[in-house]
Length: 74
Image 1 (cartoon, rainbow, N blue to C red):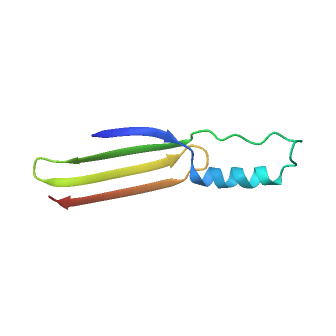
Image 2 (cartoon, helix red, strand yellow):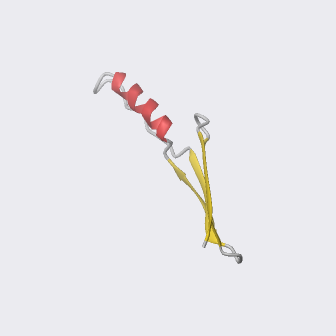
């Protein structure tokens, strides 16, 4: 099984929260976050009994990249 989804990037969220905290309340509209982090992942067991998980996330806005891979015999 493989899939992809879009999420809010944790690095962009931190930067956005910091920027919003500096704004004067009621004077400036807070910045809104967009889902810029694309997640691609695959999980399964192949015909030889190898269980695998592959994950990759990449933000189009700030360039954050994260990868995770795991395999083990069933």
